[in-house]
Amino acid sequence: MYKEDQETELKVELTKDIKKEIVAFANSGGGRIYIGIDDDGNIVGLDNTKKDIEALSGMIKDGIKSDLTLYTHIKQEQINNKNIIILEILNAPNKPYYLADKGLKSSGVYLRSGNTSVPASDEVIKKLIIDSQNIPFEEITSKHQNLHFNYLIALFKEKNIDINKNILKTLKIINLDEMYTNLGLLLSDECPFSIKCAIFNGNSKLEFRDRKEFTGSVLKQVNDTFEYLDLYNKTKGKIVGLERIDTKDYPEYALRESLLNAVIHRDYNFTGSILVSLFDDRFEITSLGGLVKGISMEDLYNGVSESRNPNLANIFYRLKYVESFGTGIGRIMESYKEYDKKPLISNTQNTFKVTLYNVNYVDKNNIKILPINLTQEEQIIEYLKKNNKINRLIVESLLDVSKTRANDILNKMINDNILIQNGTGKNTYYMLK
Image: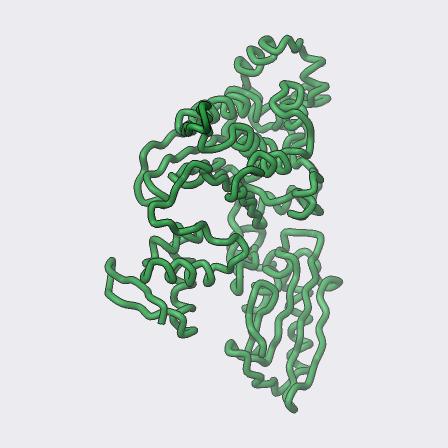
């Protein structure tokens, strides 16, 4: 049975719209398009595969830029006496690929997201261009040259580190043309990036307790954010024998290292903020940019590190904010070795997220934290086994997904005869069938 997913697209016939799918696969790691199979996976076949193959080849050659010819393979197959075409698109190197008649903009550049192809944002297009040029963000000459470094100078003075033009060049804050680099921009008082913190009541995003945004030099942002979070990192004491043992909600090292990792390793080609969320039961920090190419999650847990911003990492190292390179994740996990709830590290193509669980949190309903290896549907099922019913807002919070994605998941589970829907409007809820 054929089924659409991240790497598979089904087309009942050849149309011009197929160029959008080809572009999306080329920009997103490759995939296959089956022509002559409907959306339900039924083989309907094609009347004239020779003509369709010629037309498809022309679309690839003339309708898509850069040239994808070397990274596509077209073949004909016969299944159940019906002819179909299989187009394989490889993970092509010269991204971003785009529709020739639309140009290098959102209407011409597509990415694969699940089983659909979606337009790329201007930020993603810029990131794809820079990645293909292989020029690190921090080494590019900054568009902003009227920069000030009051916080950096004061911090260097406090650490007894000399700072002058030669040292700024050595640190790559200034380039050989004596222009400020993007690294200089990040360290300057005018840094355009920020960290947004939100403190929530309970374990969902329904009610804010407090919100703050920290700006200025990334060094200042780290210090200000950590001081802010420390206000909410409560201490719980218990008596063991004659001794009182105090335990913070979150190990200080894990909290600080998660924050440092987010700032040092994020992808600054994206202009969005680092997002920090503190709930009753957990702390989440999400930074833009997934893992550096060539590094896997397994590598990360084994202490293998490849910094996206090595010059920025070197600044933090000189200031003794970090003790050594490549040990952060391992030490975060180590700080939780005495606890049942382990940190959760998750990674997508464009985000990196660390979740730390509150070691002092006691669930009043005595509902255990769900295993991290469950699928999204399995997490909903496990929740319903303990809570009888669920609504969309709870699904959004439980799975950390958007409203649209939550609705898609719930509708699929209804169609698969797993859930039943009750109520209408805001009172809609779902139960196991």
